[in-house]
Image (cartoon, rainbow, N blue to C red; front, side, top):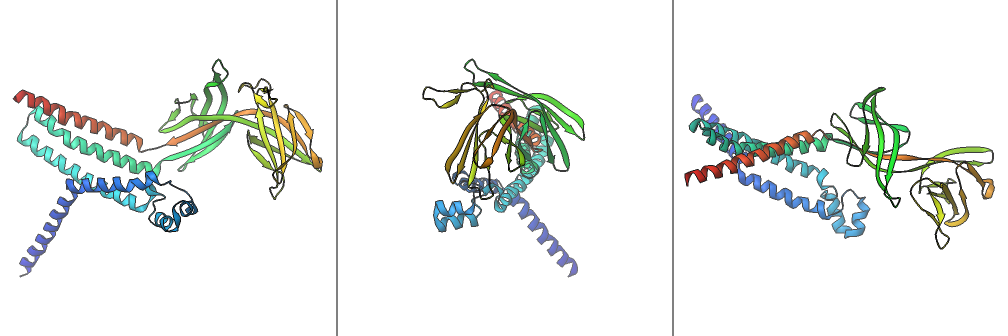
Length: 363
């Protein structure tokens, strides 16, 4: 009786295992998961992502807004259920890939010819490629790094990736211009340092990044940094602000100092200030002081000039320099995704190209 019971239990476990394996390797399950993922991606395409909950209540109403936030349709690609669906698809692809390699081995044993071997190699290659693409996407989603930083030239800024800390040092900056004075290309002389050691250096430009062990630093944009100081009642404060920024002159924020930099200052036909070119041929800085939203003072200063405003406020325009905007990225999943596409492409060629040749030979 005991042996029969053991055999029954073994048969039950074996039957469940076979059923589960057939379920995991089912093409229908894979197509179903692909279809579900395609459908659930639609909210991520048509609904703005990552907004404050009040945004959805205001734009979609209370009922739809609560559904969107409750179902994580406001962050589809970062939701738990989206990750679970992708994980199920990954498991299904893994099982199908194992099965395809098993089938390939059996086919090669039965038909040990080179054309047949290459033809039947296409299917496991395609499945392996899809598996690697999905695996790379998973790794990128959890371990990728992305940061935007603005560095005064010359200047440096630290970035931390995992447990590693690097320093980006902008040594120089240059702009090429078209004949009409508009910028055509801009360059940053960049160094990547770690613990004072120079790991890599390059003059980067748009679409020509610095690369080091999977870390890429792209030239993104540039602008002007303005050095100025404010003096009042014997106290002085120094500021470094970007062109177009504004400063609050009191804690309440009712008094605002707005800044506008003109690299090549001039006036148009109506007497309004303009910059003839983006080059610093005649630099001047405009200050507009408002109180309660109403203009109080306005003044134009050249570098190293000062002006007295109301209430004993003194402003000094100390100087200007460029800043470079850099986009720093590191995605360890990219090489895996690239390898997956190589497997996928080779698999398609092997399966269909060699198959069509064999068909023509048999005709």
